[in-house]
Length: 301
Image (cartoon, rainbow, N blue to C red; front, side):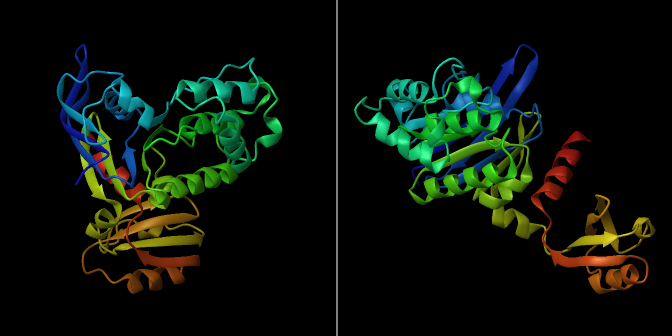
């Protein structure tokens, strides 16, 4: 398979600090790939090495079937974690400037930008200065600058930062449209709820090392349907110490309860029904958030 990104045994140190250690990835073309991990795990360093911004100390990296070079950069769209727009410029002007840098002909840029501004409901802001826009609006402007040149590979570092739920959904829908058009999207995040909505494949890294990777669907299946998702009123402290329960993640009015092998969920339901008001009781695979917490916690030990 001709992968969009291949990293083979890549490592990077900054002085005595190891940011990435022996990381190997294969990201299929036309997929949405989640590069996951807590803050400081090595996600941004990995992305910068993919883009040739940082040179790895060890290992090899291939992008779109070949080694990275200047010509390849026109096929890539990159949204960095640290945003940067010119606050005194008008939205239309700054987008046209950034589009030209990416190789969009000056004659074609206005039509392309108008299409994207309309999609993100920003057309009326085209002649406003960037500094007049909210943080979320500026985030959408940066995303437009990332994709206006129609790149094959789109790399997004924490793309949902600063977005409210409505605009988070809008960006998610646009990302899925781009995947349907054959684009490959790599995005880093520590917010698991977005990953479960859109990712095909994931890699979870912690302290610079991969601790979990593969197809999201397969990873969740490995954990089996032994998790009870509970919504309730009252207190479930009485479940602590129950011999059929392996772990409880209690959030106050909702909880994920991991059962031990061969435990009967109906017995747990009977116990709950006599003590709390149950609004939801569903048996399913564990959430990615629960898997994330377990894997990161295990690697800390």
